[in-house]
Length: 342
Image (cartoon, rainbow, N blue to C red; front, side, top):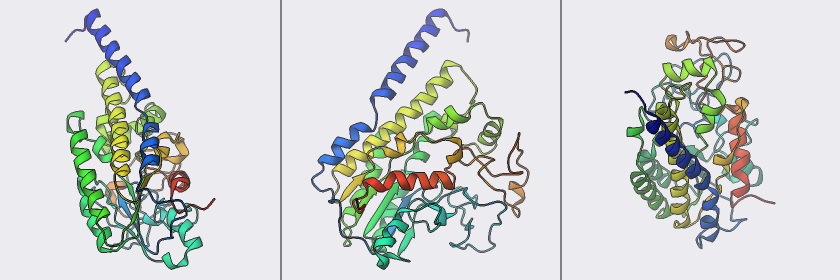
């Protein structure tokens, strides 16, 4: 349909209001709610002797393998990748690189920092996060953590709720709240009385800002259908596409505020005060053709093109954190941990 001048002015007005909303609705508003929570555990709480990570591919350190790498014929949790595949079916998880429960010294995960002061935790970490999981899987993961008697639980969830084939399929805020609250209630009733740390969803919109002109990102986002609610038609300047991207941004902000509010009303829960969302990550923090290796024994992953310098057949998706990105998340999350020593 041909756009009239009035229609275009209307699009610009909508964009102005959406940008204003994105600037006003920042996770900083969650800081007060979290600090005011009477049930938040005090800094210097008794160190845990068991912990679990809940969430999605970020906590599984998806796509952080070295170059070259092979997928084990039988799943091996110590391998990188471990061969599990998660809900995506693509076996690229490397939990040893996880910001939460990882063992790679280059990451300095929350688990490693805790073990340094409490050796009793060594070997008692579980990564229950699932690649491709949305908030509707969080209650199941929470029940696993309860069964494991985890005394400390980290949660990073929501990217897959904002990322959908279309904007219409994005998880509604009402559904997100109900599902997140249900999972938190399960953890709150655990006999282990776990301390819970909720880490905010990173700013997915920044991925588009950094990489929308990069042909490597464009090809991979399209081939793998990566977060199409945000990353479809990445070079388009049409008002509909610009509005769609900003809608995803505001949805991520809303999810983070919901998580902070639910956490504030959950015993022994703290958030990262929006630190992961505020993180101004760079290209080196993301799985690009410069930071991500290739897989040599999965035919479907052996034909990916590389434009310009980079690792041939890199499985880079220009979406997930790299090893450096995992280390950055660990560093951002630690200061708000109730176990941090200063």
